[in-house]
Length: 155
Image 1 (cartoon, rainbow, N blue to C red):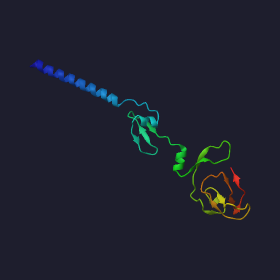
Image 2: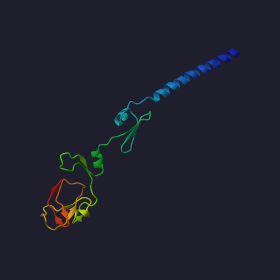
Image 3: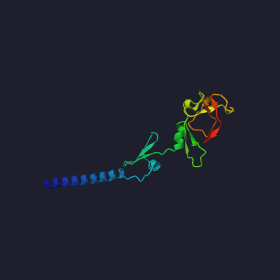
Image 4: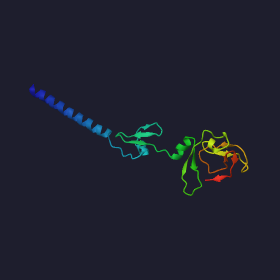
């Protein structure tokens, strides 16, 4: 009877060792190391993507990646225009954001967020009002200063 009891204990210990080994091997597979080095690789591996802006991806081993959004897209989504806003040779592209006072009547650029633009066809040195320009930057502009239409300038 004692030998049978010892045999049952030995079999139970062997079964426990087999189960623990099986669980250990499975847990190692679940915690495999990701090879992702950027957002797109993380997504391609099948990792979950957080629907935020910008989108984010996290691997099973804890690596975190944020989707890169081109500046031009961010600019356009904010209502701006992406481009070069200077005639300088070394000018870089930038975002030209709209102003909140565009098309308001003005007699000087100090009344506007950007410039007081003369009406099309205005005569230089004439007294007139203009309209606040709708964007922060302009390449060329015929501006109104102190109620007097100025010659066109380009930057």
